[in-house]
Amino acid sequence: MILLGYDIGSSSVKASIIDAETASVIASAFQPKQEMLINAPKTGWAEQDPETWWENLKLATGDVLQKAEIDPDLIGAIGISYQMHGLVIVDKDYNVLRPSIIWCDSRAVEIGEKAFKELGNQRCLSSLLNSPGNFTASKLKWVQENEPEIYEKIHKIMLPGDYIAFRLTGMAMTTISGLSEGIFWNFEESKLADFLLDHYGISQDLIPEIVPTFSEQGRLGPGVAAELGLKSGIPVTYRAGDQPNNAFSLNVLNPGEIAATAGTSGVVYGVSDEITYDPESRVNTFAHVNHEKGRPRLGVLLCINGTGILYSWLKKNLGTAGTDYDQLNKMAGDIPAGAKGLTILPFGNGAERMLNNKDLGCTIANLNFNIHSDAHIIRAAQEGVVFAFHYGMEIMKNTGIQPAVIRAGHANMFLSPVFRESLSGLTGAVIELYDTDGAQGAAIGAGVGSGHYPGFKSAFSNLKKIKVIEPDTSGQESYQEAYQTWQSELLRRLA
Image (cartoon, rainbow, N blue to C red):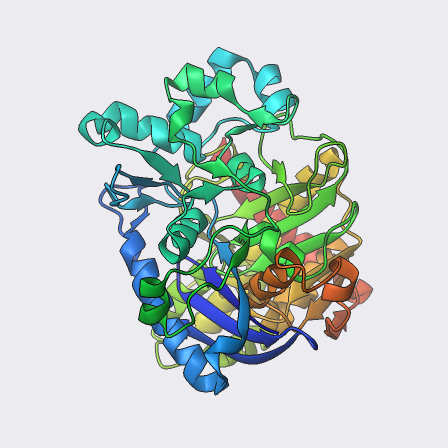
């Protein structure tokens, strides 16, 4: 069997075709070649047109089929990974009513915090495992309060992956994992969080049908199949948010296992079998892809909005536009740890959950025109992201997540020796890098959901570990000194 996986990101849409027998990649492609536009009509807002995702999915599908040179009729199942926490709203004819309010949009912070206080911190944390915060439910409440004429037309709400699955199959559905990431799920009672919906005045009728993460969730109709160059009737058998899916792609499924990413945003994601939460909701707990009633599998997620997007911004604006990321990584490697006192807080992409939903903006501190070059800025940027990871991972320890081994894909900022060696050295964790990504994970998920793989063990029997980074104890003192400088600047900004 051949499997097709899609990864619907905020920067691009990636498609991968894999051979189910060997789990090897036949071909991958992404669109657009430049990053997708994130619109910010007001400060703190972040929106994308769902039609843009669909158009780029079509382009990526055409590209990957051309590269693969296979008979499309051999594709047996489709899986979807998607950017988490976004809100897509449609009318009774399933037309999109407004641009999607995506994951890094901060407009609903005050709404979520108000609900947290009014409903009671303990009730929210024990039932939702999180504050309503700036998540999808609070974004929907924002629409209700600020765009009532649009809200009145809503027939169904969807997460970005739900919308893409709908475009593929014509079926409006969602999952428990997806509902939990939107703070729509009550873990104490294993049902929709009706007490939050009632508090917000939101009807349960707006929630689509709930289906298992691994299951048949509709099939491609003739029109869509012809549009994509695929055969009619291919089932969609898996959907998951990008971070649960990234963990899944790394075979992180059991308590104590940890995954990380460092793309546009940065994430550390640990699996627990205990109902656990951070009292301040700075790290968040959601249902993992293999969560079941009576057999909990929960993902404890640390998210840092400003990670690769900082690196991308520097590349575009630092006078290094013609320099590729490999060259930037080499520049950073020529500078000693600590970047001669230069420090960067990478918080320039919206409100940060681990900072109690404060939007600090990015800070470049201690810049000296006489001693610092662009290479120092690149080094300080990479270290700033590492320090943000470390700061958040210290919070995660309070929820029982102890990162001794971190698994990550060999991609994005984990391609940088400075980044991965600094992270390993500062945290003391071994980092294992694997040859996989979100689109490949979605394809494997499709194989599980279609029944091709009898279980997770067989699905990951060919997962390839390509590099191991052991903590460099000789660099501990330099890392710690630089981190203390960074942390002091952060605490000063938070005061």
